[in-house]
Length: 330
View 1: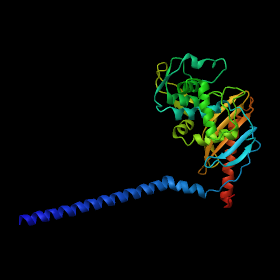
View 2: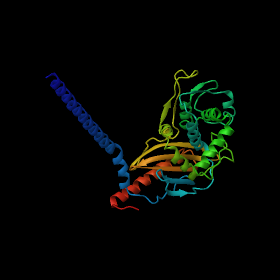
View 3: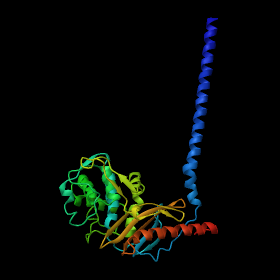
View 4: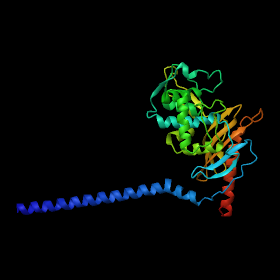
């Protein structure tokens, strides 16, 4: 009898174990199905939807303020329109796009602090360089320097990053040039991290578009460039931190364009370079990059480069809507 009861208990145990395994398996299947459904609704559905949108072959970008401009699809890099796209320009502070991506890729700890020295500020005041607001002797997190270089276009942030990574701005410029060569920016040469005028510091709007296409694939870069504002952490000189604002977004009252919105960008200006802008926008599920340079402003129009970007993105949206209404592609 005792032996029979033990066998019966073992049988119950095996059956119970089997039921537990089966229930667990069913739960896993249900969870996987839910994950797939959520993924479809949030990601795959959008991914497939973009292929259902009309494909633009070209967009007329004439009649704008900028003498140099290019419109590129972010996915694949197809050029939809250009004006003197491979003509040499001075990139001014669009240079800082390269500075920031090189810094991100060469600094592992973005929470580490860098002490800004007097040498890092040498010449900046004399050249009337834009600064984020830090001071000599200030201990600043790397992430705050990255935001400081991109949003308010702080030259001291760029030099602090360059000196920390390479020991000098000249050596850092070599890293920038190596990166440019790797990306196929064949008509670009950097002399410094800030974009302050130098006749040997040049690029093209096409090369800058190629650079931006690469950079927005980096999550850290993208988070920075898409931010309208940023508040730094506490420092030994600024106990409340510093809040600074994107030079593009503060001059862009409404980022909405036809069929989408402008997501981020970097402005630039010197008297030699004119008004410059690299931006990207999402329109009807696709992302586009627009780069312009050399625009001339006056008292009645201080943001000709930003007006150009809004104008061109509206043209993209309108062209897509027209094709959708006509039910045609091409």
